[in-house]
Amino acid sequence: MSRPILVINCGSSSIKFALVPEHVAAHQVRRSGLAENLGTPEALLNITTEDGKKTSVAIPHADHQAALTEILKRLGDELPIAIGHRVVHGGEKFTHAVQIDESVLKVIRETTPLAPLHNPANLQGIDATLKLFADLPQVAVFDTAFHQTMPPQAFRYALPEDLYSKHHIRRYGFHGTSHAYVTQHTDQLVGGDNNGWISAHLGNGCSTCAVWQGKSMDTSMGLTPLEGLVMGTRSGNVDPSLHIHLTRTLGWSLEEIDQILNKKSGLLGLSGLSNDMRTLTEAAADGHRGAELAIDVFCYRLAQSLAAMSCALPVFTGIIFTGGIGENAAVIRAKTLALLPHFGLYLDADKNQKMIRGAEGRIDQGANDTELGINAYLGRQIWVIPTDEEGQIARETRSVLGL
Ligand code: AMP
Image (tube, protein in one colour):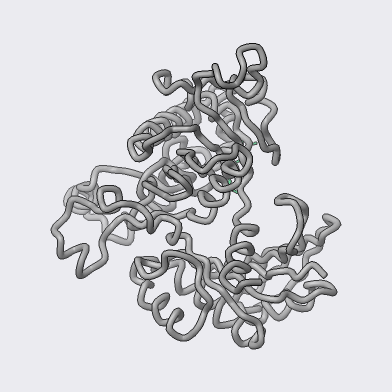
């Protein structure tokens, strides 16, 4: 019996799911899938089974509940013993995962103004699964919860007190499940519980996080996932007066500015070509100026953020790269670390080149320092750790329910 947990991540028109058995290696193929274009004639369910076989089924006009019914039919022989939901925003109320009941749903609903696009979609998914799996315990795992250990000096904006105490304006941080997984996993690989890591989750969304003794001390995203690094289509940090300036000078509405900053900026905006780092690294190698600029700004801002995060750590053990870009783009890792010559980060160029496509390991020169002995090595550790957000959600779900 593998006693699997069904992990669900609902977007406004999509559902990602994975069936996570109790004892399997982190990156063993799982039964998983994606239902997309929900509510449209093109709604489609893509499923991968444990043997890696992929199938697609048309589910025209299916809503969240209809899609979940189709998913349920294709879960295989062993049904889940519980469900873990990814919920984007837990505000200040949730410092860890919780079993879902009426009071939890109420708080997620109340937190919606802080995540107007994400929390309603997450609630829709929870609502549908509560109807379909009425007998199964369900747990909410929040992207923000891991960062609730940040001290006020890291989470407060320099704004009037009322905006925090009455209106909850503060830095929350996101990608908590990923930062938690990669730092806990690296702690296990390295041993000891006194490690200070900076993890860099670099995917479509990007964030850094300083983690000391397993606790988040600071992170680059803030009130919303727009703050911080350059991302695929998100600008990251801009001058706080930009909104005012664009409205005054160009007459743009808030909605237009929101669209520009979230959907048309970042790598896409800078390059004028693509939000996909694969396309950009290839184009830059062919001399595309926009792609070169986008990569330069991405790496410089990432290096700045890594340096800034080191302020939050009493001990700086090393850096962990994860996410699609962090796990695969050796050239981006090398370019970023080359911008931090004062930080004792000695990259092993050969190991860096080889650490791609799901490989996990250390890529600094100390990793193979047998002549000097590892204790004589003065550099910091540099790791590539493929993230496993679904595995982490399943683990937290089991832990909350004592399963
Ligand atoms: P994620 O959101 O974690 O799935 O990451 C998606 C991003 O990873 C995409 O923007 C891709 O540009 C990037 N990515 C995936 N593979 C590679 C690769 N081999 N080289 C560069 N970027 C990659």
